[in-house]
Image (cartoon, rainbow, N blue to C red; front, side):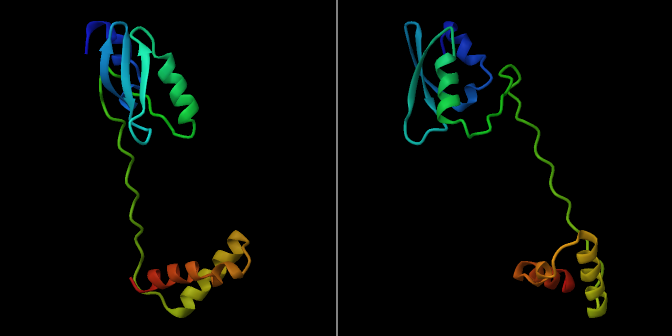
Length: 127
């Protein structure tokens, strides 16, 4: 990129755009979030057009600001810990655990009769 395109290069949301060309005092970029080939133009000394595009067109997207000087990726999200189950559980123990769960959380009994809850119990029981 040319020297005078520093504003775009140093912008914290530049990673959402791909530089296409510079003509005189204008910079053309391609939005990576838009389907197709959405080209946008802005002056070399401002990013206001690009800011407005992100705010209006991609308002529902959670944008991540990056420091262009470091070009570091955001820290990875930690992995979920695997749940450890004890050994097999007897039917009486399982009934007691389900009953205490219902009482503790104050849920209606239909909660534990749902197919999704039954499959959880089945998976936990036979691990």
